[in-house]
Every structure is written in structure tokens, then in C-alpha cells.
Length: 79
Image (cartoon, rainbow, N blue to C red; front, side, top):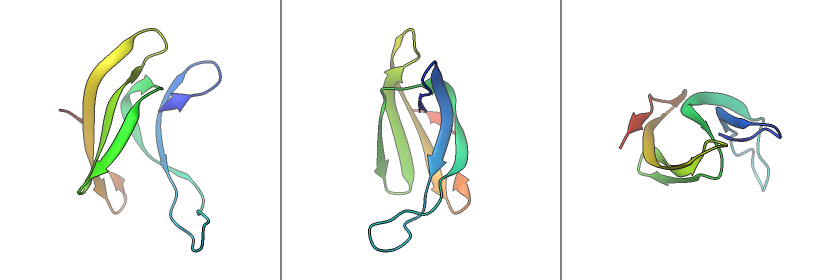
């Protein structure tokens, strides 16, 4: 998710640590159920939680989580 300059986005991207203070290349690992920005995210255990956000029109008070897997993320579930 995030802001694409003209609209909210739903892509979820990740980059591996490449050693030192650098990151590897970003790759898309999932698509969030909604296009949002201005959200918060936290990792607890093996899950990522996305809290709230903005649709570009309306504020959100939702929480979604997905399991962090070797090849990306599992399905997003409303919490």
C-alpha cells in the first residue's frame, strides 16, 4: 500500500538485507485487500499486521494480518 502520486496503492513490497547497511532489490510479495496509504504496520511473531489507513477518500479503522512465509505472505485476514 501507499501513495502512487495520484491514487492509493495495494501492492506489498519487500527487500532482503544485503549485508552491511544495504538492501537487495524490492519485489512485490502480495496485494493488500484494499488500496490504502497513511497506514501503520507491525510484525509480531510470524505475522504482519496493517492497521487503519486512508482509501484516498475515507479513513479506515480496520486491522488485517498475513502470515510471513518464505515465498512472501499468506492470505490477508481481517482481525
